[in-house]
Image (cartoon, rainbow, N blue to C red; front, side, top):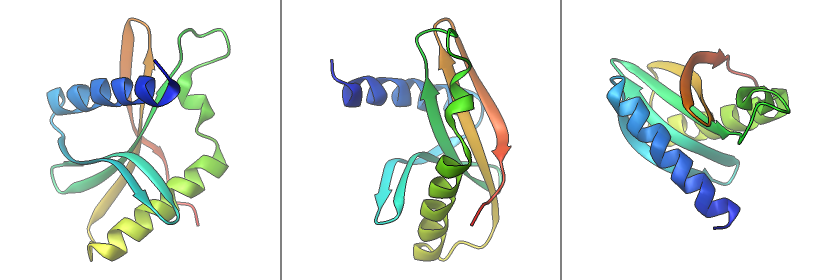
Length: 115
């Protein structure tokens, strides 16, 4: 299995997890000219942009630690593009789903909008 296939597998796991915790999946693997977003979902009246991170062990730290400022900016630009395209002006949240063997967790409001 290549990295893309592994990524799809963990994104599917993250979608199932989010749905079990009350979110509705709107889109997976959203790509636009300024970046990509793993999952776009909604929770109540909030639009959620979700980054999925997996690590096979904690040897080098937690998966969410890889979502640095540069990655956050890229996600935010893609989110802004999506919101502009869909004329969305409501509540927004940026989440991270962190996956390690035997544990998956959702970090709501993992970061704020960066330009």
